[in-house]
Length: 75
Image 1: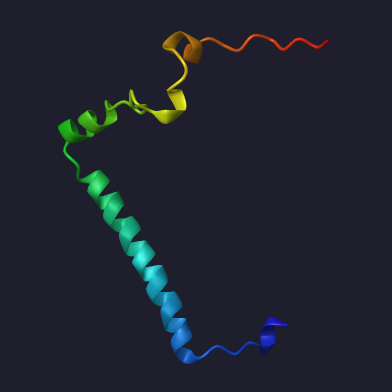
Image 2: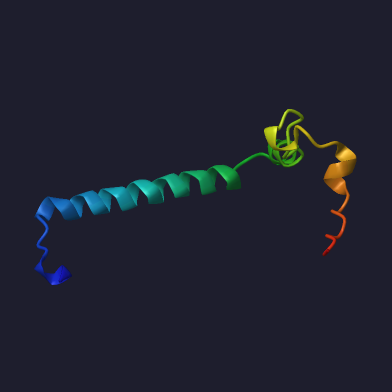
C-alpha cells in the first residue's frame, strides 16, 4: 500500500534538512559538554535536582519522603 505513495522530490529535502538540524543540535550539545571547564561542570553537577518549592513534594515532610511506605494490610 505504501508503494503507491509517490512523494514529490522536495519532500525528500525536508527529511534531509530535519535530520541535519537534529544532528547539528546534538553535535553542538556534545561539543559544548566536552569543552566545558572543569569548575563549571563541577558546579552544574553539584546542583540539587529537587527544588524546595517542588509541587510534587509540597504535602510531604522530609521524613515521609525518605521512609519506605508501610506494608499494605489485606483484610
